[in-house]
Length: 515
Image (cartoon, rainbow, N blue to C red; front, side, top):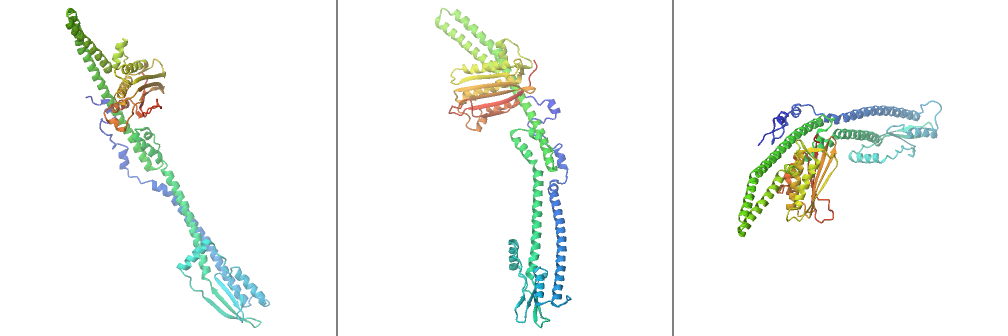
């Protein structure tokens, strides 16, 4: 058994049967580096900016509210002093009449000037001269909070201070000043609602910024996950083409995946090369067997036919013995025909050379030569005795030059997979019709050969058929070694048939060999 060439070892290919060493750079460097995690900083950077902005806004709002509350407190104190001056008739000028005084006091109380205080006046008979101001109805949220606060934290009982007030006209009024805890509570809850609103808006903005940062940071995960999912389908190109990531952790993962793609690609190349070597050894062994059969068995059979013919001539007067001698010669001729057919299967290219008396190409084979090989193969199955299946060949080479030369290894691989596929149809498909289709066309600087075999038989009952020894696993391995991938499914050439049939399809890229 041959070993992996030194050129592969020098190129850095791993030994067959071994996994690539992922401990080399850059993976080891990624493990050694203990760089700080970048993702939390990126995510929280915007949140910190929103939080600082919210704190600054809360500070400005608090300072503005403090100035406003101070102004209201001072205004309330001045209004209370004005009310006391009115009641004490200390405003200068002529004393006010009763109606003028009550109107002035009512105006002071109605304007909200007496902050958290209610002023009441009663005459000598106890009739109310000045009623407390009526608080406006709170909105729904404030009413709910007021009710909750009164239930959980009941306000203290209001305190009142009263004294008699003698009027110049001889009347004695009763003056009462009563503190209003409900007004103080209402004002405090209004400030609480403003604070909660500010917190809600700040939290919503912070969550929105964090969501946007997280979404932007993890957006590159989509191509990463897509590239990882394609590893199962042996598609390494998306891994190699991963772009640089904006986040350090994701970029490290992308670098590791690119390195993994390179290592897997090298391992796949080495395995493909080894598989090609094994198939080459198999063909060499077939050629050796064919030479031995031709050189040894062919000579003996020819000698036996000569001896049988001599015996037949010498025994011309003895009919019974002459018949036996003639039968021996016929048997030798049939064996020779079987040997020639076996040689054709073992060495198809050499057999075609012998049939056409033309030497084979050193570097490749023509498209016409491939077509002739496949025609011979299909014709052999068509003429095979006891066959109920009709075989047909569809060969399309309109998209490539007639004198284009294909690699010899590709021609042999197409012949072998066609041979194996048609053998499987004959043995297992129970089909009435089978079709071999080959399309050769230009693709870029090289070309592509599309190979399809389909039949109208019973198809594959399950995926385990690839491991049951009916040639499909070897066929898939040979196509893979030739640089293609085998696809399979239900046949589509005969949609009217009740049976699903089987369709095998492969695309084999190749480089056109110079003539």
